[in-house]
Each structure stands twice: as structure tokens, then as C-alpha cells.
Figure 1 (cartoon, rainbow, N blue to C red):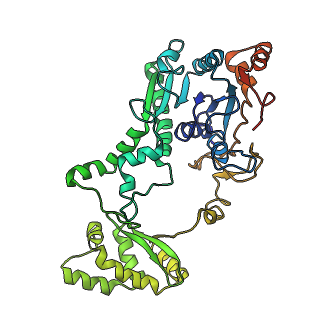
Figure 2: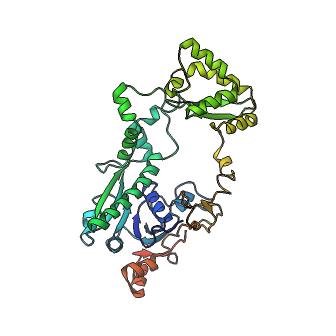
Figure 3: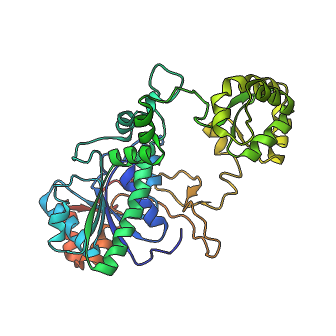
Amino acid sequence: MYSFLDGLSIIEASSFVASPTAGLYCAQFGAQVIRVDQTGGGPDYRRWPVTEANDSLYWENLNRAKKSVAVDLRRPEGREIVQELVRATGQLITNFPADGFLSHALLAQGCPDLVTLRIMGWADGSPALDYTINNAVGYPMLTGTGPDPVNHVLPAWDLISGAYGAFAMLAAMQWRSTSGEGCEIRLPLSDVAIGTVANLGGLAEMLYTGRDRPRLGNAVYGLFGRDFTTRDGVRTMIVVATHRQWANLLVALGLSEDVAAIEQERGVSFEQDDGLRYTLRDMLYPLFERAIRSRDYADLSTAFDAGGIVFSPYRRMLDAVHDPALVANNPIFGTVPNPSGFDYPAAGTFATVPQMHRREPCPAPYNGQHTEEVLADLLSLPAAEIARLIDAGIVGNIASGDPK
């Protein structure tokens, strides 16, 4: 946690991954992010993974460092409260429909300089999820060895959209600080996905070649990189990203003469040509397979480290979370009380600022934990009015329902 955004308040009305991620990143840099939650929890409040008590570890971690106001969004008075909270802060992150009670035009009637970030599925407002957008842009048909499509387990477009959305919102706020104008930013997952394809050269490549990339399994497109297995059975990914790494890899494996023989036979030089190493990979792979299969992993890893070679053994996520370098000794993690009651390392900001003190990560809120505080501070509602809203079920707090 850092204090770059101290003093900034943002209302977040969202669920699932992309929109909560945008709010999370703002909160981790010091913004007061206030979630507006349906009383009893929204559609993702119990999303897996969950504990035996059915507390969502997913929800608990995507909503760290935020506050929660519980409102019955099905009732007009509850919706009006949310609208007034948005107008009081001037910032909104949401994935609610563009033409509903949280439409930018409606909210801006009482807050003309409002900045709204709206995460969407498709640009026309049609619903979509990361898993369907990924299919739409074609990546599952490039993944694996074929012929069947292979879905990716990581919701990449959700996460990229969340990060891009946080950036775009802060950019809009900077624009407002100089122009005095608010705006709505609409960020469809579909545009993030196809735009990323374009940024990586994929769109131009498809139009230039008129065909899909080959299915390469674990090989890396355009580089010399693939998984190999050591003598003691350790499956390891090796990727050559620079010409120096290529030279050092040949020395580490004792393959300089063998590779030189291929170069002489074909009249080529691999020394300075990534594409050539990739194109002739089927001639090179057998040499590397034999060399790596003749060595134990510990021996190879020492040689690879000395040569600055990029490699990593495959391992389970269960192994990764017990890696001290990744978790236990990593300063991005801290320990805080969690609503689920389960004690585990909590992630703070991924970025480190050496010149600043890193604050500890914060816990996620209980549903409605900050209802009374926020309604009093932002809307200046008296205690009697807040009590009436609670008694009428229009808003909730942890004393009026399930604290989890």
C-alpha cells in the first residue's frame, strides 16, 4: 500500500474480475474505494474458491483495502442513495449497464464533472466474459498442439482490462484537473482483447499471411524456446531471448560444435538471428534434447544461472505458494485479519517504491461494514435517518445481517 492517491474517493459498483480489479489497484495506491454491495452480497460474493464456511477467497482478495456499503439495489430509494454517493465523490467504477440507474448521463445531471469508468463485455453493451472473449479473438485455436481448442485458465482480458481501466480513469481525472470536464470511459473486454492482439502484431500478421500461426504446444513462437526434460526427470522451460543467451546456452550444454555443423551444412548462422533459430528449430531440438537429457537439473541450473540463461522448471501452484522468494520473503505480502477467518499472506501493491515506506496490505470489508460511516460522512445523513434506512431494509450493516 502506498499513499499516492490519499484524499481520492471512488464509488465502485461491480462484480466478477475486471471492474473490481480496477478498484483494487486504486485502493492499493491509497484511494478510498467504497464498494456498493447488494445487501447479503452480489452475484460473485460466494464465488469459488471458497472455504468450508462458503466464504469466497476470490472476493476477499479482489476487494482488499476497500469499504463496503450494503444497499438493496432492487428498491428505488436504495438506488437513489447510490446515485447520491457517486455524485458526492465524482468518481465511479462499474460494470453495470450503460443505460441503467448508473448511466453516466443520469449521474452527471447532479455532477457535471463526473468521471465514470464502465467495464463492458462488447462495445454494443452485449454481455461477455473473459472466457468467451478469448474464444472470439482466436487464442484457444493457437494454443496447445491441436486440433481441439485449448482454453486458458488465467482470465487475462479481465486482468488487463482492470489495470487499463485504473490507468484510464486516472488519465481522465488528470484531464478534468486541467479542463474542468468530466467524462465516461467505456472499456469493453472485446476491445482490450483485439487491441492487445493488434499491439502484439497479431492482427497485422493474420492479414499479411492470411493464415493462423502453427500450433506449437510449449514452444515459443518466433524464438528458440521449449520445454525439455533433464536426466532426473525435471521438466524445464528454456527460452533464448538475446543473442548472448544463445551463445551462453551452447557453451553450457557443450553444443557449440554440433550447432556449427548444422550452420555449415545449411549455409546459415544462428548467432544473430532469432527467426532462423525458430525456423530451423526441428534440426536444433534433437541436439538440445540429448544434451539436457544427459544432465541432472541441479547441474544444469548452476550452469544456466552462470550464463544468464532464462529457464524455469515446471511446478504446481501449490509448490509456488511455498516458495520463500515468491511469498514468504516477498515484501508485497503481509498478514492481516480476513473476513473468512483464514490466516494467509495478503498481497499489497505489486510495484515497489524504494523511496517510500510500504504500508501493510489491508483486509477486505464485511458486507455493509462501512454503511453507517459512509452515509454519515459523504451524504451527511443524521443517525436517525440511517437507522430508519437500516430498519426499512433499504441499507444494511454487519449488525443487520450476515457479517460475512
